[in-house]
Image 1 (cartoon, rainbow, N blue to C red):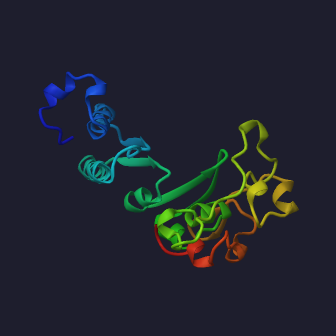
Image 2: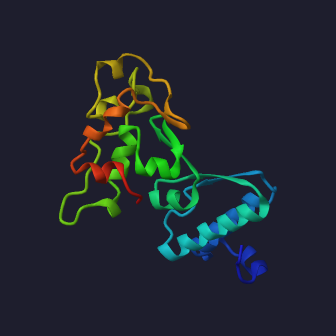
Image 3: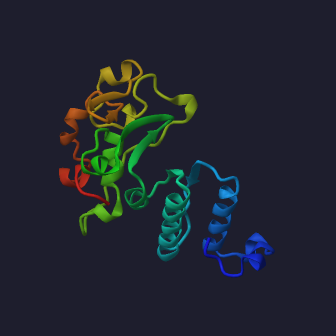
Length: 201
């Protein structure tokens, strides 16, 4: 884990470790059983940019050395862009889109994905309000019968609310849970289309 004096650190209490040190200890514990799959849930949360980069580099090195897969769960698009080959976007209990990471950043096929990308601060237009997704995520007891995102979606119609939406495959290896994915170009989300559907964070 690249920790100095590991024996001494192992004898410390958790509150005596920095965020980066604690994260490395957690990774070491996860690797103790030599897993084929490492599930990293928000591995860089609350870390500064320098330590975040060190932890991501460490995960990448460990993946190569041990030949294991990593399932990375994160709200940070930059982390996903740096680490992931394939991306799955989830909303209210559903996978709403799945694609190679580069393809998704360049052309999202679900309004929720497009909204998330548009609200990324690095994509903001200077001196203009940052686009947001209206409304809130419903509680599990209040999930809609049809598309779970329909109450917050600018493209939603009665068809979207009538029945559960299956995962569609509009192009090879691209999946979306949206009946109107071909109309995403009309979803401005408070800014021009390029901020929503193209580029990387």
